[in-house]
Length: 149
Image 1 (cartoon, rainbow, N blue to C red):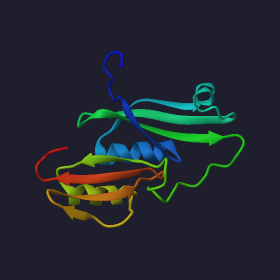
Image 2 (image 1 turned 180 degrees about the vertical axis):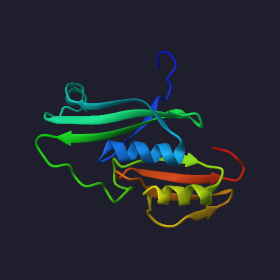
Image 3 (image 1 turned 180 degrees about the horizontal axis):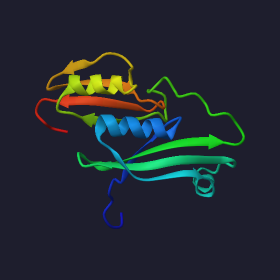
C-alpha cells in the first residue's frame, strides 16, 4: 500500500435523481455538493457500456463524515430496469444511518415516501430496520443505545 487510504463516498443507484435528493435531504439532512445531469462520455468510459448516461449528485450532511452519492442511469439501448426488490442479491447494498430517535426517524422516512422491507428488530443495545427510499435505493435506520456507531 502506498500512502493513506480514505473512504470518500457511498453510492446508491436510484431510478430518478430529484425525488431521491429530496428524500435524503428531508429525512437525513443531506445537501447536494453538486448535481450533474446527462453525464455521458465519462460514464461510458467508467462502465464500458455504450449508450449509457447518468444524472448524479454527491451530498454532504454535517451529521455524517461520509459523502452520499446518488446516481440515476439512463440507456439509449434498453429501457431502465425496475428497482430490485431484493436487497440480498449480489451487487445490491445499503447505507445505514445511526439516529438518536428511531421511531421518529422511521415515521419521517415513511411520510417522505420510504417503504419498510420488513419490521424493526431489537437486538442487545439497539434497534434496526431496512427500508427502500423513493427511487429504489436500500437503507437502514439504526439506533444504538450506547451511542456507538
